[in-house]
Length: 161
Length: 165
Image 1 (cartoon, one colour):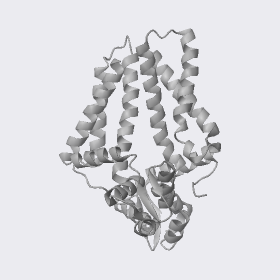
Image 2 (image 1 turned 135 degrees about the horizontal axis):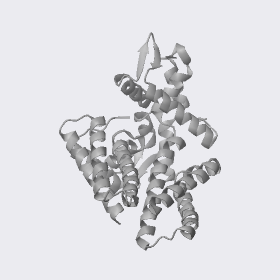
Image 3 (image 1 turned 90 degrees about the vertical axis):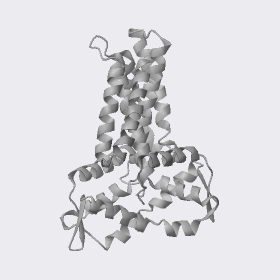
Image 4 (image 1 turned 30 degrees about the vertical axis):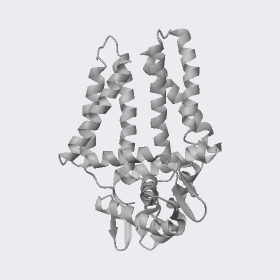
């Protein structure tokens, strides 16, 4: 149980560090990095690092990585997820929402323009002479890799194919 | 090291089985089935390894179960990117598909009409029973209300604002 407790302690420290970092004005990426490293340190040391018995610290490390990733997804989807945004709107409406009104307000065109603006602001995509170009190497790799995975695992390159 | 060994081997075996048959699973089973595959893999791997190296305590088995299910949960989240198109990555791929000439601004409308993301997300929320669509209106059924409230509370704690879209 020491690995479970150590990983849980690491996650709690990680979440607390994340909140504190953002409150102190750190940007999102740095806050994630700081909270991850802090939590990982706690998770490994609390499990009792010993070269004679690596089981507990390795288990704690693996558990912390999984739980921190779930935490990262939870925090990130709260910010940017389409599903979460839809649910927030429906929750706030406190009753039935006319479907056609909802679709008009949250249409794919405005979604794409918002995402595109975000990418241009972040410098991953540029617009030149009425054309868009991807200049971020990381984004390029991620996009192609996700398409490749879909092709290999699902046999199609898009859910809309 | 027996706990992490069994946990990781189970997760890998479960992932391989899942990858092999997922394309034939119904859409609403594709992600959640990962838990089942990993659990079944844990039984197989745990039984096999324990014939060579006896796991001494219920504590170890419990930790192994938690580790395997944690790895499965992380896998489920990653697989969401495979099962559903990310608007950002789809847009990126669409731009890259235009090659060195770049994607013309006029092509954006066609792209958004061929990628009904909102409809897809609504359909998945309806199929999960989180919202109800009676054809005229959408109704929140409250299944994940607590999770949403926790998420909201955490965002307020961080002092952050939601990004639209």
